[in-house]
Image 1 (cartoon, helix red, strand yellow):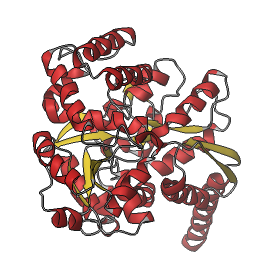
Image 2 (cartoon, helix red, strand yellow):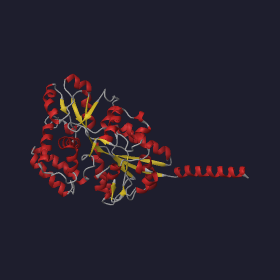
Image 3 (cartoon, helix red, strand yellow):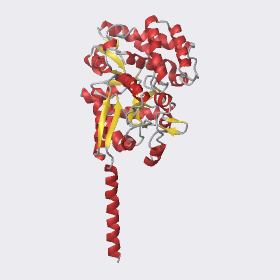
Length: 424
């Protein structure tokens, strides 16, 4: 009798296991994943897709990529599709106001709280990150990474040859600027328009400090006050040591990094996807082929952003989307993606699960994320909604055309009021 019972029990267990496999493989149809990760950033996304396809071979993944750094082109296409009732199954969106202040408040995203409960993610992601993807009790995306915005990139051998130290403050940078120019080198290289906005937030953090920078976006600091005038004046001085009036608008962020690597420029302020590019594409070793430091004045502060994916209302294949999101939020998914991307996992346990995957830069970034004062990126969607960011481009144009810091802070205050941003 016992033998018969054991055989029956084993048969039942086998059926349940097989049933589980078939349930997983029962997913079918197309899964359209919309992002701006192409070219040098493509391999990281492709690693995630490969992991998903291995687990769900019946689903055909459509990699709908719209090229353009920082998603400037992709967001315009996405807006047209979302408002036209043709959402992708899942799309890349920055955690923070780009997600909640643009799509969640408009009732365009599904609540993923039940997925978080099912996957046990409340203990896996930092509480402050979950707060940035939550709205009125719901959670609306799955973060795949953490990027750092405030990084100054350089080549150690070049800096040594030219005979100066990596600047710790913007005053230090402005002091060494003439020396760099005398060597026939661009002191600080910038590229197309969004990279100038990216530089601005690092200057703002360096001038204001993390506490005042964060207060700027929550109504705790006067947008048109003397502190902000100082930010714009410092920014103007920094731009005088750049290529802003030469070839900047025609350069991608990769080309700006290439100029640093080639010795045509001394420094570039860019997010740490630049580390992914230099490591994965250019084959350079951190600390040797390229160096890195917190952007001037920001040591001890981590200007962060996070790429995430959600489930839009009206998606054609929500079951496959939930399976995709489950892969993104897993330790395996985060460790397949982040070493290639030049970012650290959003999960707090992923690096410890596979520390050998993460190079010196990423280990340093993970340590800083855990210990630094945190500040949310403006240029990459944490601090303000998409309406404000679109209008901030006009504020920037006002400053670039006039150089008038007082007029610029007045324009910025008007945009904050108009777009319900900056605590208004």
